[in-house]
Length: 499
Ligand code: ADP
Ligand code: ADP
Ligand code: MG
Image 1 (cartoon, protein in one colour):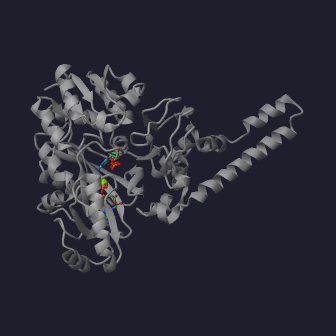
Image 2: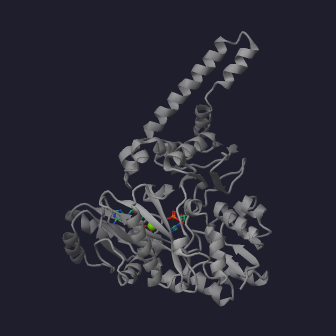
């Protein structure tokens, strides 16, 4: 069935990104928004827009029933949930279907199986997908947990089955800590997810997080669109992603891709999804979880495959068969993404709020900016503090890195601290450049003082140039030529930092 009117049950950059593709496909786009987002670009861009309620998500973007009623009243035939909010909510998905509306995503059953890390492990095990050594059942008994931990060897990780967004995980280094850490994990899981089920698995030392993008249609066809390397993380959450990974061989890439396709088979998966793996120092890979939605970092896969993942999602939801086979897919060049968060990297990445008094995007060949703000806007405190995703694409990894550093220098954000200077630090670090890094990159290599040092270096240079300018101010021409000599990178880079 052709979709003609599409509601995007989300906000910010991802709502805009979805609408752009929908418009290209001749589909009418319908935005929803909270009172805090009334002036947001996603509201302006849509063909129609409806207010859901006050700023808190629970009173707006999470009001599934209201969204469904709106679809019925306005004759909307499909909902795209984006990521976060209702995107992985199987109850919502069931209600959407009962109301006769197309949900752009997998079935509720697939969401149920993959939404819970324990049931996901049980399902994929039958399809010979490698799992991290450990349990695939919930534990309550401390003595049993101890015996399992002893068998797999410390350190172990206690994880919430319902966990997400990097929350609900505890590392246990030795047996004496197990009981207290387990208690903490259970109470954290109850608080965060309303479900206290936890399990134990081996804590992989020197791990890399590598995930596979998949697409599956409703006719039994399933392909993988290669990997994304997401090992640069803070608080178990990604900040820099790239495709392809610098370390995979074609053989391991194929094995991981085929394992991801098996994960899809284990739950009759349809639409776009991501299978996350943890990879150890010997390139052994283990299934972590499946995210049953479009992922934040999907653009890097789009850049290297030339596919529009949202377009494919819509066509699959319309019942179309995939238009390409595995053999048709090839990797073209290298793509990087940095997440621009309103966070202060010099202050433990704490969210920073304020107004974007200056906001100018970088431009040029191979640069893509997916964002949801304009200059002069405030970053609301109610939602995820991501301002933008900056993506570069080039022939080689080295060129993609060079392009990214240039783009970061060109990005002008004043009024809010962002993760941009931190990302630049990472991109220039020998460990990142060499490709030999793991999920501990930030803890191992980063100290907030590095940014301060660099700032004072930049400030010193600017001060020197200004001094120079003052000395040579006898003639106006000397002044103007000197001001042109201020290195753009330093002056812009400093602007990124200045409130
Ligand atoms: P991705 O792998 O796509 O980057 P993330 O884990 O960063 O996924 O989450 C994507 C979005 O979903 C973010 O906005 C994050 O805040 C939100 N999110 C993910 N899991 C949860 C959860 N369990 N509870 C609340 N928000 C979540
Ligand atoms: P979430 O649902 O919060 O995304 P994941 O299972 O995907 O949870 O894990 C998030 C991150 O935590 C991973 O990207 C990885 O950095 C780390 N992690 C998870 N499991 C392990 C493990 N067994 N060993 C080491 N690190 C792990
Ligand atoms: Mg994950």
